[in-house]
Image 1 (cartoon, rainbow, N blue to C red):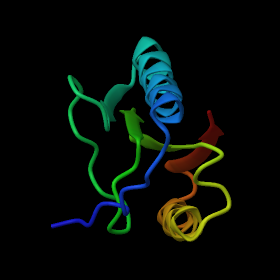
Image 2: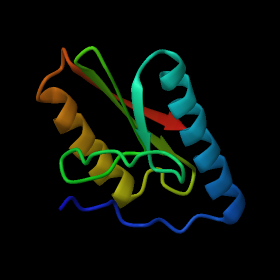
Image 3: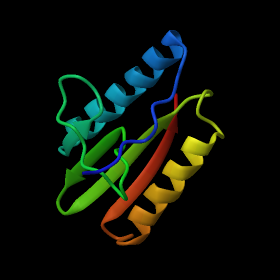
Length: 105
């Protein structure tokens, strides 16, 4: 079973902003025809990448896009650095079919 990233304690208003950005990314990719999973209620859960669960995983035509949303509470912390390293490694395994995007909320 994949490990989730450590839960980060965010202020309530920052968590809402994070979750809204996750939702906006998920909606955007779904509108572009991707099959989308997101770490939000009401969405399918994303599969792990390098043992960590991303905020959004969008897939279409053999291409996968992993999106991780960060806030001022997570930059440049240890959790962010571990996620960034893991998700870059995931992308580098097949750079023509995989993309990794970090979005700041």
